[in-house]
Image 1 (tube, rainbow, N blue to C red):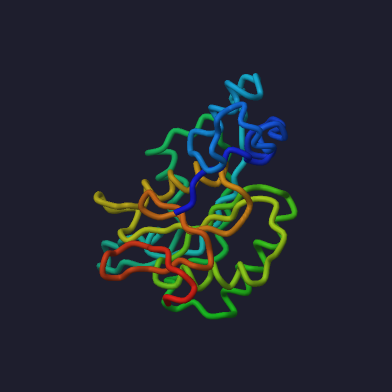
Image 2 (image 1 turned 90 degrees about the horizontal axis):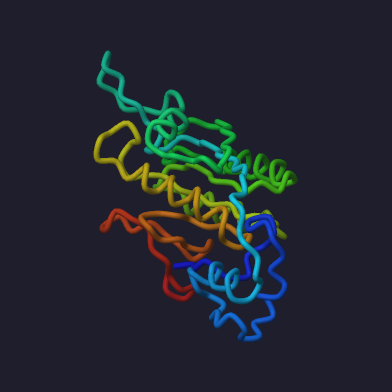
Length: 225
């Protein structure tokens, strides 16, 4: 699990955290404290946080999270993106501007390295804009695509967070709303890097994998694959 760190970059917080980064003990921050940001603001920096608006790029590649049910034939497939409508219906984001790009509508079991290269190329191009990015992806091969991009894209200046769902967004008991909400928050707070956000946990790529028995994701050490 990745904790939010108090020395967050200026693109995320909107103010200079150089005083906090010195870790001189003035604010009592541990350096890896989810509440460190507020502690440093109040005790160390003496600056009041403003309600800064953020723009986040949301990239959809399909997967279970975007599958829709077709009443005419009873199929459950990736046919169109439904994420923006569901977000507007279920999540309040007064300080976040979302830009949606649908680059694939595919079950991740059928993704190829050619698909992953296309996702990687698209990320590489959009990362020039320094916008934090959330990628919607099928869970079966999410860690493979995330690792593929991690190995090919270096020197990130913003976070890239992959997320998805075990149950489609259109279904009542879906985990999709939780996962998307948490990813949208985390992508504005964590340091640059590749992550998977799932079920109230944030995992750093590459040491993350799907646990099919527990129907979630987990971290692992490099020597314990």
